[in-house]
Length: 289
Image (cartoon, rainbow, N blue to C red; front, side, top):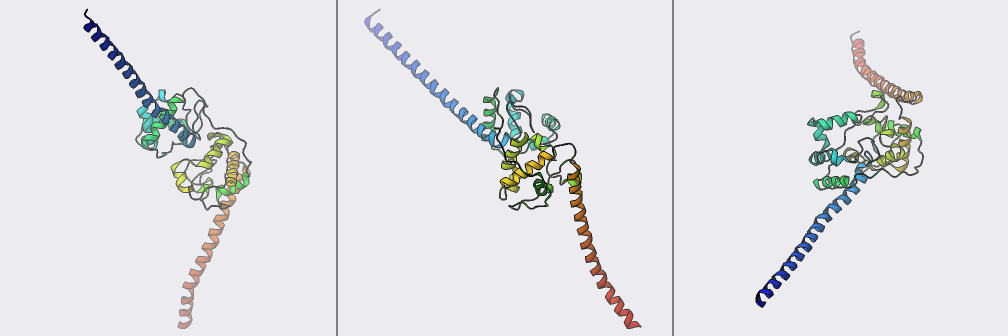
């Protein structure tokens, strides 16, 4: 082998090593670049989970209002999971069998549409995947005790909320009392205390009101801290199959008082109408005689 050939081969070998090294470095940079957004997505998803999801779900801590989400990215296809997080109401309306079964399994309390963007949905899924095998629940903390009697007054509207919000009973029922228990626009709250994870879960829900519907109503007229404590105490007292007799009679009394006021006003109104009709008749009768 001539010296020129040896030199050429050595130069080629050196250039090949340089190229391989450069490609390895480029691959490393590419991998890091791809991994960084995923890590960022998971971090954003963790923030979203703690803001909007942790009231109803745990990761590895058991079921609450909704299912435990540990391993959910393995139990469900990613596309289905993304569609469910983005628009659960639409999937229920379309009759999706998995969605319908979950609704039946969790007391017919539907998952709300949180109006999340595609990026937020992707971030949540990334976090759920990264958090698999861990335990994520609400942090327990000591809470001030509220007054259940004051909570009853706020719930029924017997006492106005400080910032002018509507009474809970205008949308929610409680303890299966039908019309006496309130409206049907929102879910029955008889078991809300247990469903939302006790004091801490219910406190977080009343503070954040994470659903779109609740935020639309309460964003400009939020509950005060004392009102939250009183309502939480009332809902805790009501978390039994039947309300205490005293509470039942309170609602019956409220309904009876309302009916009595209505009848008195109706009587006054109709008496005036009868007088207005009778006066001309009496006058005509006197003239004719």
